[in-house]
Length: 150
Image (cartoon, rainbow, N blue to C red; front, side, top):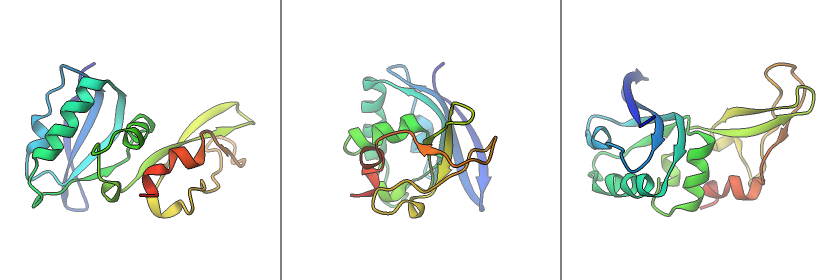
């Protein structure tokens, strides 16, 4: 499934919701729209090298007068942010998902966090949305939160 786009408003700002796969066939023209201020990346599920390269080039083409902020960044999005220089400016991340494991239900839950919740690359304590039991962070904290240390 290629990327698809939807628009909505959040706190009186125009948001572009990006869904699907970032691959070689991706059309990133909607990211160039100056009226877009926020990008919702919750539904970005896969990313491939050519699509990532196009993404970085497209963001570099945007005017500095129209900076973007990123909401609900998926785990896949954060993994790429940690690997690719220039993928997204760290301070542009408003919120992101992080993987937590619940022993009781034997599931990984992706929990929405704000950068301010993470201190010294330590995952904040979170409870299972199904059982309320304390969950364990399901990744290497230092590596996953690397983008916040820059």
